[in-house]
Length: 140
Image 1 (cartoon, helix red, strand yellow):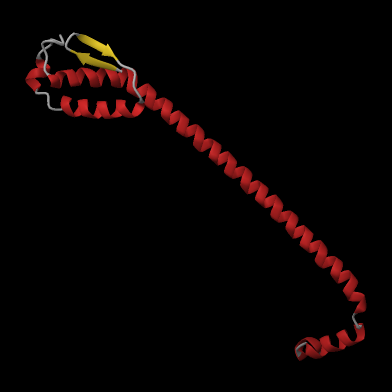
Image 2 (image 1 turned 120 degrees about the vertical axis):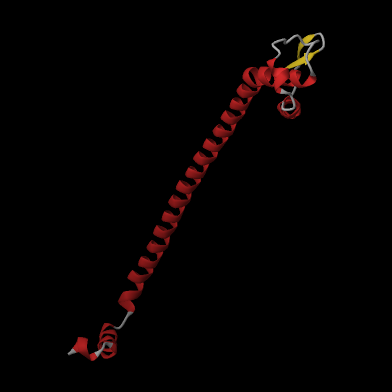
C-alpha cells in the first residue's frame, strides 16, 4: 500500500487485515475534509491537511491496491464454493448408488426367501382362506 508521509509517499507491505483497518481509519479521516480544502488544487504533502492526506490514501490504495486484492480474495472464495459444490454433488451421487445397491441386495434376499417359502405353502388351504376372506361382492 502507499502511505502519505511528510516527505512523500511511502510504500509499505502489510497483510489484508491491517490494510482494511488502515483504509477504514483514513477513509473516516478523509470524510472530514471541507469543500474549501478540496477546491485547493495543491497536493504537496507538506502543505495539505491530514484529511486531504486521507483522501490521497483512499484514492491511491483503492484504485491501485485494495480493489485487486479484494478481487483475488473473492476469486479464492468462489473457488472454494465451487469445490464444495462439486464435493457435495459427488457425495449425493455416491449416496444414491450405495442406497440403490442396498435396495437391490435386500430385494434379492426377499425374493430368494419367497422362492424357497412359496412351495412349502399349502396351496389349497391358502386359496380357501383367501376366498373366505374376500368380500362377497368380489366372490359372487
